Length: 221
Image (cartoon, rainbow, N blue to C red; front, top):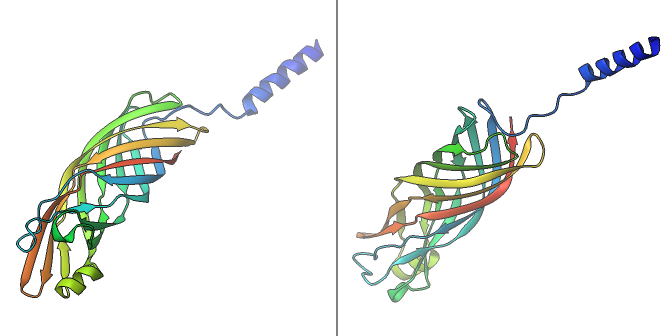
């Protein structure tokens, strides 16, 4: 009898002191932090460079950069995500006399806020969709050496823009706190580039509209 009581007491003590099994998935109040590598692939087109090059338009190059984002879960299903990344792009002539010539470079900072719906928050495989707004800032703009050599010293400025964003992705648990993330976004993004060479001012309207596809790691707090 004493042996049975001892075994029962030992099992009860182990049950009380053993670590609790970690909860699967996400819940209201969680913070999710993700670090992704993203491919930024512009899909839009541009107008012509007016008034000097009315037969010429430009293309924006694709870039691969790191991206950091933060999500706060307002409920088990609803979260808000702030996406932060910056990238440097080149606009190259794609038609007319400047075809194939790099014309300008700019850094792009497009902070984007999306409201997400997580379909299966308690699963280890958690797809989500989102929609939101974007504000794109262009900075450190400059003409290329080819433009300065051909036309003279040229200043470049690019207008900021508001736009909308769509998003879909999935989080896949590696451990109770760490997960893989796959994400794709479409961002409505445009700008007017102004190139000033002395008294001559040229402008070109550019629709960038990138698809941003990423993969990375995340942590739940």
